[in-house]
Every structure is written in C-alpha cells, then in structure tokens.
Figure 1 (cartoon, one colour):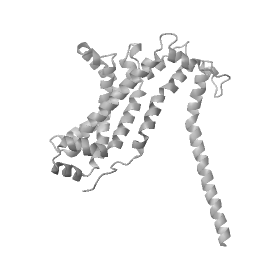
Figure 2 (cartoon, rainbow, N blue to C red; figure 1 turned 90 degrees about the vertical axis):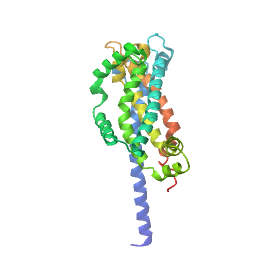
Figure 3 (tube, one colour; figure 1 turned 30 degrees about the vertical axis):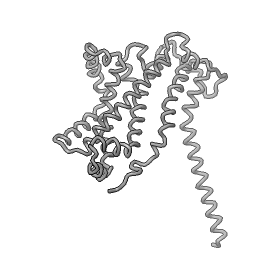
Figure 4 (cartoon, rainbow, N blue to C red; figure 1 turned 180 degrees about the vertical axis):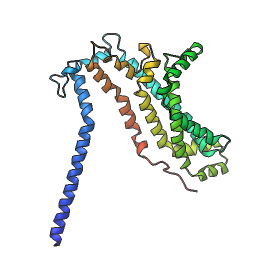
Length: 295
C-alpha cells in the first residue's frame, strides 16, 4: 500500500470518527433538551389542559407566567414559595457543609475512643432513609412545637432540622475521605509553626478541600430544593409551602388542573439552580489539592 493510499485511509477513518461522535453528541443533547422544550411549550401554550398539549403550540402567550408571578387569584403566592425554598435550601446547605466539615476533620485527624463505632453508626443510620421514619419525625416535630414553635410542625425551621438529620451522615463519610487524602505533613508543619488545630483546619485544610465543600453544598441544595414528600407532610399553611409543594396545587385538583401555570412555575423554579451552577462551575472542575506542598 502506497503512502498516498494509507494517508487517504487515515483521513477517512478520522472523518468517520468525528462524524459518529458528532452524531452521538447531537442525539444526547436532543434527548436532554426535549423535556425542557416540552415544558416551555406547555408554559407558553394558551391551553391549560394536558389533553390538548403538543410540542409545537398553536399560539404563544406569557399569561401563565403573569398568572403565577402577579398572583392574580390571590391564592398562589409563587414568589413566597420560592423565597421559602431558597431559605430552607440555602440554610440547610450552609449548615450541612459547616457541621460535616468539622465532624469529618475530627474523624480524619484525631484518634479518640469510640471513633470507629461512631463512624459505623453514622453509616448504619444512613441505610434507612427519612421516608421510613416520616411518622416518627412528624410526632417529634409536633412535640417540639409545643415548647419551641419555630422548629415544630408547619415551620421552616422544623423542616430544616429534618433535612439536616438526613444529610449529615453520608456527607460526613464523603468529606472524611477527602480529608484523609490531604497529607498529614501539612498539619505537622502548621503545628510546628505554632498554629492550633482550629487554625490549621481553617487556613490550611479548608482551602484544599474547597471542591468537595462545593459539591456537598450543591447536592444538598438540589436535594432540599426539589423535595416534595417531607415538605408536604410537615407543612400545612399555604404561606409556608416550598416550591415543590406549592406547584403541586396546580395539578392536584381533579377538575381544575392548570398545567400551563405549573409548567411556567417549573421553568422559573429552575433558575436559582442554573445560577448556582454557573457561579460554582470553576470550583467543580478544579483539582482537590491544588497548591498543596508535599512534606
């Protein structure tokens, strides 16, 4: 085979490889965007019945967006639901990251009696999801509400307390693994320079594990922001509803299902998550121990 024939064969193979990769990429993008396109079509379609829903609407209107944003009927406080969801999700995420970072650092760096037993207990507790204890959680919050209404039934504080209990165990194990990957020589060097354990944790360890802190924050935020079942059981007042619970009111009625406002609300509800991913994408892509100095 001559060099010219070999070069032509290599070019054809390269073009074929690029072509099938582009085809797979385009199909994957189309598969991912199809639900979004369908929801957007439902949001701008004048009809509110799912029976008449189609991918390409016969007309376009933004009445559904005005309906939920302006609260024209007075019983759909969409912006209040979004504020409640953001408050619950951000507070839970910040508390989870703060508490689990301290717990993971203690389990990773210190040796104390009962350490292994506590770690195994945390892992065992995570085997049973919150849904299995939903009745017990409801009764606990009802009892707590008699003394501290701020963390009782139908309170955002009580919902945050439940989310904290469900997210602490797994995230502690996950973060401990990252702390274990940080060389202990850094701690020893800091202690030799006169730094305390708290100073070592804040000024040396935390900057190195920033990517996992961001990952845990995002996972906790998404999990609490989109939760429906626990919020639906624990919250009773419509003004305390989160977005997932509030939006369900549009499609829960047997003869008054408003899929148009529901789709519009679903699109608007996705905006905070998109903004969050936009601002933290660099941290997600960065290395775990960038800038660390090996001892």
